[in-house]
Length: 121
View 1: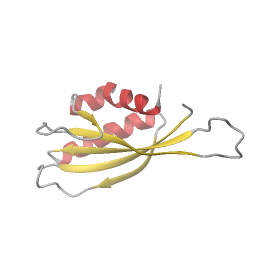
View 2: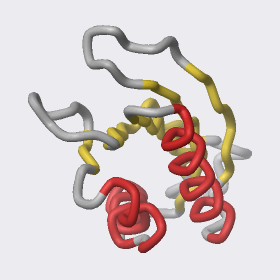
View 3: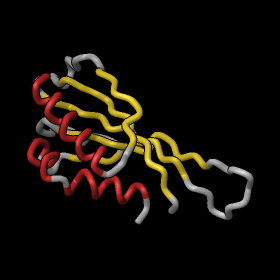
View 4: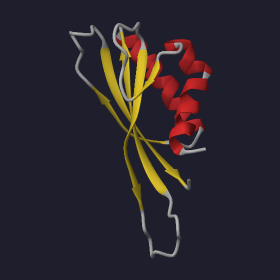
């Protein structure tokens, strides 16, 4: 299973995450006119460490960006906690957490979580 497939499966099948966002998990971009809370994720980058060129297919490091959208700050914290717990249990590295400004147009609180995964796919 590819890193992207594994990541998608992890967050879409997690009971704690789904209790908050239901099926509102979107790759790459949000749909229009959706209910909140929701999350959107994408691969920000995938890089290879070509150490000593002794490996035909060196591991790839995937950098995922997970964007959270909620109607309240309390919901934002709960969703962040559920994601952090899931990522830690799966040995995914949380590389950054950034609170974005309140989005007046969408009337949502937003946060971006950076996740790093090393894959031998």
